[in-house]
Image 1 (cartoon, helix red, strand yellow):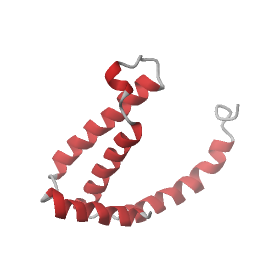
Image 2 (cartoon, helix red, strand yellow; image 1 turned 135 degrees about the vertical axis):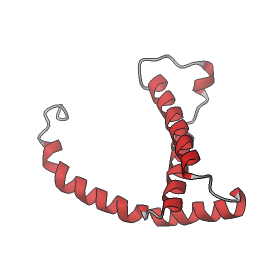
Image 3 (cartoon, helix red, strand yellow; image 1 turned 120 degrees about the vertical axis):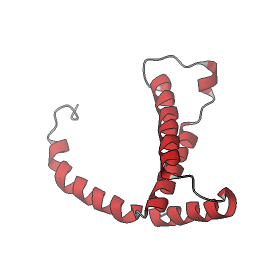
Image 4 (cartoon, one colour; image 1 turned 60 degrees about the horizontal axis):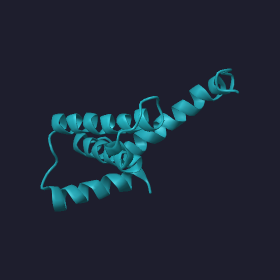
Length: 109
């Protein structure tokens, strides 16, 4: 699915179920909270911290989807075309980073 379709889907959901968007500062705080939940799962599941019983039930995909939802909300309410921005960023990274990554001895093991 294209990102602009995801933005439209989130906007439709907000208008049909969410009444209105939370303000940008509230959504930024929510985004920080959701990223923290992703970080907790990654740190405990893939890092050196041990998982607590309550962490084992955490679904990384669900938490990443929460991050995406809030990012899409922020894009919608600030007028950002994420598809255009993402495509532009991928073109920049492709041009800038291709040789750099292929020549990085730390990545070639």
